[in-house]
Length: 147
Ligand SMILES: [Cu+2]
Image (cartoon, rainbow, N blue to C red; front, side, top):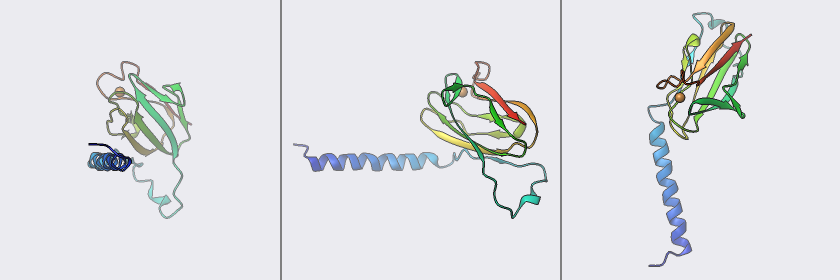
């Protein structure tokens, strides 16, 4: 049997379709989304224009976070900023967590992405880290600074 051009095309389409179904199936049940708001003092903003989130795009590796080629970067925001962390695992099983703001992504493996949004409602320097295994102790952490 000869694989003609047409058959190759159908094969590619078939593979793409299978991948699409697979990807959709995987995203169910693990949205990786959590919103944290301040205790009670958010309501005064209701009805006003939604604030743009300060977005950081980071990836996780064994055993460090990377952003624009920087290892475990300092993330700096201003008090009151809405923050969005877009997190992808480049290698291994990881998440992105910051305790003081109650924010954590779901845990993702190689090539998977997730995100979390929260409001930086207090000033200070905090630690973000990966909560998988002993990754935090192995250096998978960085500073989150609120001015
Ligand atoms: Cu990790």
